[in-house]
Structures are given as C-alpha cells and as structure tokens.
View 1 (cartoon, rainbow, N blue to C red):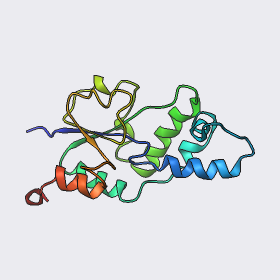
View 2 (view 1 turned 180 degrees about the vertical axis):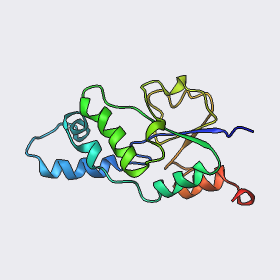
View 3 (view 1 turned 180 degrees about the horizontal axis):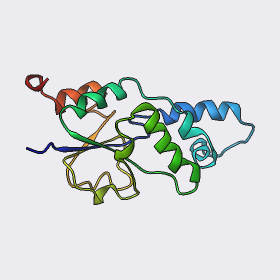
Length: 154
C-alpha cells in the first residue's frame, strides 16, 4: 500500500524567514517602504534563516507515515533564493533535499495534503486538503501532527 502524499511549504512553515528578515533589516542601512522587500534584495536571507521550533521534529514524524515533499515558492527577483533553499533543506533536512519542489503553481501538484501558512501561489486551489498552519484550526505543528497522525498510529 502506498503512502499518502504530504507537501509542506518552506518559508514561514519550516523556515523562520520573518525572524531572519528582522535581523537583516536591523543590520542594513538601506531603508525599505515595505520591510518584506528585503527578501528580494538579500543574498543571504534564505541561507541564514533558522528552523521554526518543532518543525523539523514534526517533519521527521510525518516521514514515518507519509511520503513527504517540501513545496516552496522562490522569489523571481532573488536569484540566490533558489539555490539557498536547496542548501538550507540539505543542511537541516538531509533526507529531504532531493524531495524539494520549487514552483509558483502549487495547485498543479497531485497529493493528499498541503501544509502551508498562506493561500498564495496556488495553495488555495490545491486539489487535496490544505492544512492552513498557524491559523485557527491548526495553530501549531503539534495540532497538525495530532490531526495527521491519530494516537493509534503512533
């Protein structure tokens, strides 16, 4: 019997991109009208970001029960982000670096679940179940695991 497929977004779900954004904003003299614009400018933001607490452990647990892939979107205007995401995944999730998918069209992938913190880049149109993490129904990684791995399967 084949395992169900789970896609997991990277930025804001596994990677603390916002935390690194604040660090880099504090270190730069450049002023941004929109602080998130640093994401397009930075040559290190993706590489230097830290994991979100409990995300790596949750993924390791999900891998025991599901066929798990990392599904992320990389900014078009930051050419460094594409390779940095791959390097980050290899560093923190070595079992997953060959299961990294970068796309702006998440709705095109076939799978059972998508764990994502946003509705953009096709997440809202994903044909499986969108688990909107860090929102009301799934406020934590723990709540996602409780939903996807019932107690009798652990």
